[in-house]
Length: 66
Length: 184
Image (cartoon, rainbow over all chains, first blue to last red; front, side, top):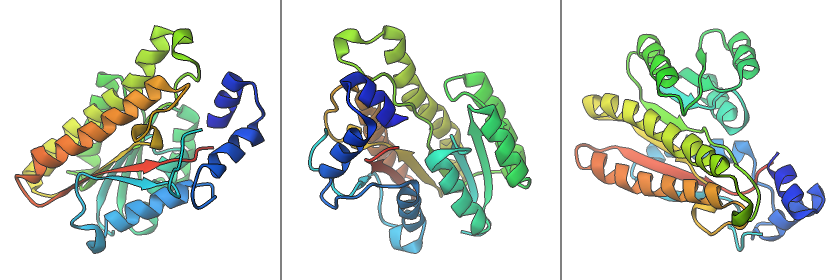
């Protein structure tokens, strides 16, 4: 849905928008819901006990917003 | 995560649903709300031992009713995850409708406020808790064509920082926010 809205605003096709996202990510990958859930699992574990008030990006490292 | 009491907004679909499934798989007691009645019905059928309520996170009455149900079902809360948000319009700012702007801000920020306000009372009393607020790369960068979304997600970061200070001084707890970039 996200891409469909953006392509409408830009007048470009969905695959182009997806490719733009991935091209702007250092790891060149599409981040999934599982990736986010995995981070929550880490934060809600003894290993994450001293992480507080942080903006933690699970994004493959964003180099630019396209 | 067994025995944990978890509340997730927008928990019947997308990222919220994946998070709910993970907690359920590990034995947690989970309560969710979602604006989509069909997704709520599906969730109820799939996870009959969970609480699933159809509610709009910008409607204080509906959320109060949800929280009352959570109080009865969970008798407290250990983890809350603010998953509700909308992408809002995709357009240059001069072409945005004021109603779209307000809807985008309200769903992300007002909905998160209502959830956190309820959770904070429990967590302050219990001297324990985990709050996770979902933001976005739009909350860390400027985001062309998505100005209301970017503003709302930057607001989430501000709330995260403030909560950590308001609540962390009282007890050892974790107030967190996560960012995610690529969306489908």
